[in-house]
Length: 59
Image 1 (cartoon, helix red, strand yellow):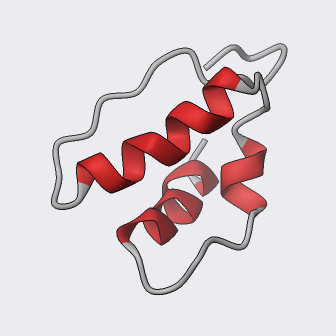
Image 2 (cartoon, helix red, strand yellow):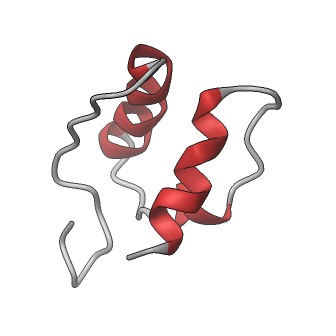
C-alpha cells in the first residue's frame, strides 16, 4: 500500500474463493481508489469478499 495515497499496490490471496475476492481488489486498484473503499464499503452478502472489510481494518 502507498502510505501517501492509500492505494493498493498489489495483492496476493491464498484462500477459499480467492478468485472472487481478487476481482474486487483489482477493481479498486484499477480505479486508483484508496484501500478505505474496501474497508468502509458495504459489500454484497453473503460472499467471501466481505472479509476484505476485516482485512483492511488491520492497516
